[in-house]
Structures are given as structure tokens and as C-alpha cells.
Image (tube, rainbow, N blue to C red; front, side, top):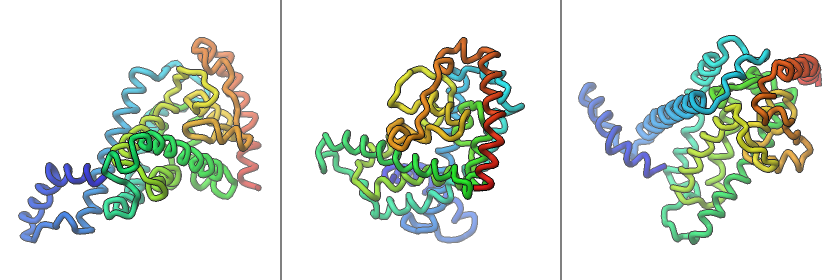
Length: 296
């Protein structure tokens, strides 16, 4: 992140702070000022995630998303706009809570490194696999714990408002929910070494992946990859498929549910009969699920 912020300081923030100082007749905040670094990180991270969210989700909705899903009985009126509004409310708070982690990286407390050969080229790939497995394991348990009765209504229930999702549902959650599920991505580099560019690439990937598992287009029937079909099962039936990238931990801890064939078949998926059956299953199960989360 120090590479990114170096460019941002040179081409954006130096001019901004110099102009602000000129307008207020004060001394410009130096680059090593903690206040300046915090403000700059907030502005950069917020601008990045907003642009990435609306750009990636927008492209996915335009070119990939099966818009016939919007005729599903569980698709809410004006849902796309509601998802965007929900995400827009959550992102500033998530960004604010994220800044201390990035500050820790900038000040050398993480295990991010710069030299490509420090641990060898093979480790670059190994560290990427470690990142995926570590974050998948952590998010599995964060997500599963968010379904606990003491937490669900306060934190995670908002995201389950979107039973039939669009790509814009990817970041449409309570800010604490979004922050908790992002924590493993920040924690990883404080636990094992990662090259800075590998980490940045993976950080971009996880944001794209979050959109992809909500895009409603089930391009591959794969029992290992936790794709959109598996995550759709989670939104339809709630207590299954908590994983983010793989089904490994759902299988290990007995929360895996294989997507039914009609989910993969577009014509069957959009069948009024199939959609009505799904809606009936949800209407039957939801009161029990909601009551158990309130009373347990």
C-alpha cells in the first residue's frame, strides 16, 4: 500500500494539502503526519471501493446478470436501488474502521515485503494459496457466527433481505457485518509474509469475487469452488454454504448444501413453477428460522 500511497501523494495529495495550506495560511501537513496519512487513506480507500463496487457490479449487471431473475417472487420492488443505497450507507463506516489496518501496514507492522526473491518465486504462489485458504476459513466462521441468534438480527439480517440477489447485493450489508467479513483480508499479512503486489492483486480479486458470487450467473458446476450457485443456496436457504471461496469448510463442518440442477439450468431457473416452489420453501422455513434466531 505504501507504493500506491506514494503515487497518490505525488500526483494528488501533495497538491491538495499545499492548496489547503495556502487557503488557510497554514503550513502544509507533511507526508509523515499521522493525521495526513489517516485522511489520505480514508479518501483513497473510500474512492477506490466506491469506484470498484459500482464499476464491477455495474458491468456484471449489464453484461452477465440474468435479469429474468428480477421476476422472482422474492425479488423486492426497486431492489437494485435499495441494494445500492444500502452499500452506499455502509461503505464510509467500513472505510473508517479499515484505516488503522492500512496504517499498520504503512508503518511496517505487517509482513508485507518488496523484494520478489526474498522468499523465492515459488512462495509467491504459495502465499496466494495460503491467503485464499486462511481468509476462507476465517470468513466461514465469521459468517457462521453472524447467524447466531445473539448476532444475526443486529448485524447480518440486513444482508439477507436480498433473497434473490443482483451484483449490487455484494456490498449491501450492515457496516459492522461488512467490516467483520473483511477483517481476515487485513489480518493475513500480519500473520504470514506476502509480496506487496501479490497482496494488492488479491485484494482486488476478493472484491471482484464478492460481486461474482452475487451475480446470479452460474457458469460452472464445481463442487469445490464456492461460486454464485452455492452462495445463492445460502441466500435462499440461509443456514448453508457459509464459505467465501471454496466449499471445503462447509464440507468439513457439515453446512454444505449442493445446488440443485435447476439453479444451473437457466430455462429451469427462470421457470415460474421453480420460482414459486422456491418462494414457498422460503415462506415455510423463514418464520421458523427467524423465531429460532430470536429465541435461542
